[in-house]
Length: 315
Image (cartoon, rainbow, N blue to C red):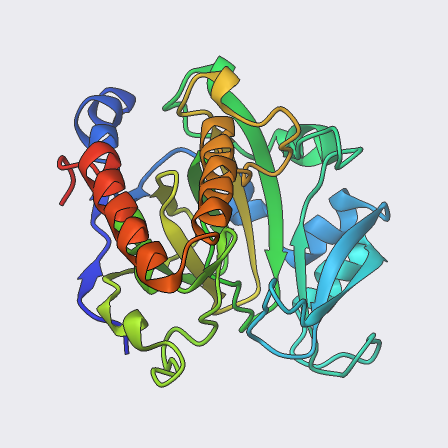
């Protein structure tokens, strides 16, 4: 199992002022209850979504197993009419399927041109726009995207981080969300923005021994809950029921800090990307030395990075 466990705090009736002045600066996950989200939490049934969402085709992930892995790509990309997706995702067993009768479905809505356009439920699903209200806790010019998500019961998404702040609005169904602090990245066996550890509840500690040191923050989301996920916090999401959610991402940093080609909100800031490239070049230069010298100067580099770049202001 993972190391220390902490519940994500839950607060009801938080105002914009309270959130921005007292809670947001802490940069920690928080479940907000009692936020006015509009009629979506009661209206977005399977029948309603099938009718209003229409037959426009959407690109989806289809998996034969519950634990989806974006590193090994243990799923297929397929397209379905939106109404068919909703109906299939709500089923436990399927009469029509791509892989097997118990396959899992996952929709992450995309922009009109995913290479250029961000997802925005108000543009891709305009007939649903009037049903949902976004929490007005940030400035409109900070808005980046609103991602419509639909998940089959039991589906588990891989542990990953995003580079922008995020409200996960649980519209219908239930989810369990497990989060890990950015400070524990060294224990998560990263490949890019994603963790290699798929089974976070019963990890292979022979293969991933450091994972036992990762601090684990956990919450259950029900319809109407809003989870604040600060940028860089790792999160793993398990849909305990068929569920519909909307993620609202906004820019925490000045716009010029972000990669202008990023339509998903998960590309590292440009300064971080440049620093990683410089580090790669430095490591290639170190490789010219014999092992004893390479080890010595690499350790000095690590100490220099810790001294100059590590923050002393976080728990």
